[in-house]
Length: 411
Image (cartoon, rainbow, N blue to C red; front, side, top):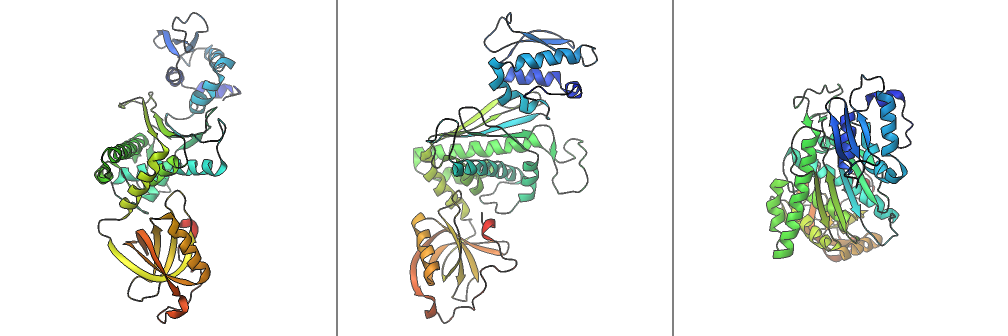
């Protein structure tokens, strides 16, 4: 649509009211109208509408509808407004109504560019933000793990990714406003009959924003009080381990970042503000790291110390200083545990123990998730000594056992 190569069929299915709404959101002004026949719009900055105004036809049955619409699209995408047209209007013109999420991260790279790995991480963090917020729609929780994952993925499957804005690296996500997301997976097509067909996408998107807002408030509370209590209290509003680590990936190594949501005004129903914006700084990173560790340690977890062999290593930059697996050599506790460290330096000690076949002692909050046991907010207390010294060591197993989670699955 950005090159105006639309067929006549495309123009017939173009919604004039939607085009009007998108142009008004982008800065055009309505300077005249005749109900059911036309809307007259003036470009941004031309309040009088005398120069460069154009008419959007509203009657699809009129014989001149296609011709007039072609003229409108040429004017709205003229060189003067081409950037605005390509960024804010064209991607949404022939899609269902959508709410726009923009994830921006400034870095030391030249304007409009970002280091490759940072760009990948920004996209990953944007995805995790949407998923965490979608999970919070189902029920608030400190740490979701795999809970509500299928529902969140069905929401994510309905979201489109848009192009970045000129002059800055921004990940755009367009979430449908008026469609529905099934509560359960089904092979049958969902007939949209309102809430009976599932959950309205806009309601899920609003849960994402509520979780974002609650997390921002918790960050501000920490800055003024030095207390993480705001994250605990914010759980009922969507704060979670997953949301904290998602935002952490946006703030880390940044010169400033923000998440902006523009609500589609063509969809019936009220939103508090047409635009919601949440800003972050690189200084928020250590706060989010502390909050993530606190939220990951569930209330029913128990503090445990384990001596064992490091058998898996998985560096997860966005989620924590490091994750590795330990095969327990003591015999009276879980056979294998996943360890999520609280201290970055200790990960290097785990690598050394793995390379040199040394036993380690690790301590943390023990929690079970499905068939896996985790040590959260953990510390590598010490390197105990060579594995040969432990007569209670279980027989060696291959480093990848059928049914065991792979490194790529460690979140």
